[in-house]
View 1: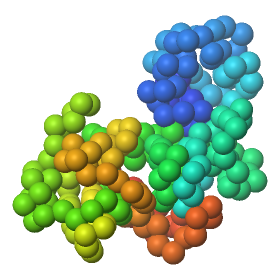
View 2 (view 1 turned 30 degrees about the vertical axis):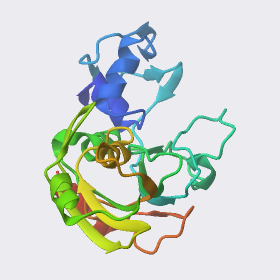
View 3 (view 1 turned 180 degrees about the vertical axis):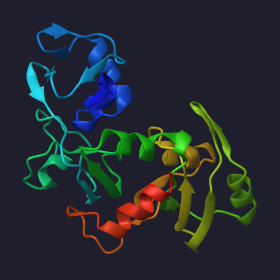
Length: 237
């Protein structure tokens, strides 16, 4: 089979195609005995051997999981962190799983893992508009007028954010529980959105990515997506 080098790396679970291009251009990929710097180079999988960091690679069977990431846990695959990381909860498997996007250290909730780079790109990139839904505990009450202002969006330092949906689930003088749905994944985006309106996020939990729901999955638990979950999610793009 003839295929572009960047797509081949993606099929091998190394990274999504764009990140694979960075790896290729940085000299980490060889075809047979030669370093290759062009991501669009065509390889023949029947006769060529591709190496990543001097290790031969080949396409993997794709796997897809969902985890309830606990609070006070880093979304990283680095092995030199002093704090607890999501690696602690991953299944013992022969494939290299990586998280699709990330959640803040103090944020709990739905995190998807896979070894399918193309899938990860389509779920996380804003252009595919995959919705993410969060339960947000805000400090204090918010008025109906402020809620209307929030629904019209906010001009943040890294771009404008217009929520897909904004709903108050409960409120009192001490705390307001808001469900917010967005289709972007910029760093601290939910916290920064409410900070724009001078509201502090006390607790944050992601409960859905596209059609995939967190459900009753307990913190620290990870399970494979079933056929229907995976099919419904892929319909979103």
